[in-house]
Image 1 (cartoon, helix red, strand yellow):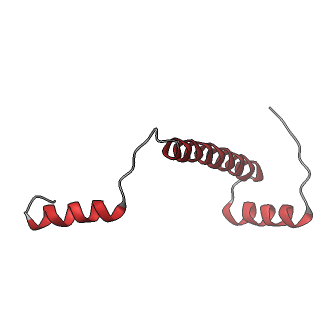
Image 2: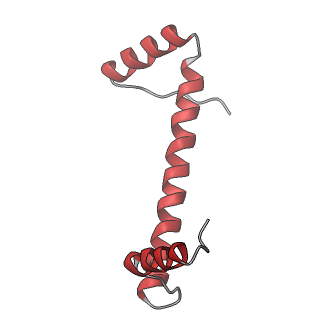
Length: 81
């Protein structure tokens, strides 16, 4: 799908310089930036859902100090990798 956008001069200048320096198209970087933005939004939503599940008790967690203690105990016994 073709689309046109208006960029502020500073963004257009940066995009043009990047494109010339790397010999990749402006289109490449615009698609890349949008793809990364959507990935970040998706990951943020997933993280928020996990946090919500933890807060309401649907997911249990183990304190870091307990994990370290378990590892150290196992290491003393020769069990840890």
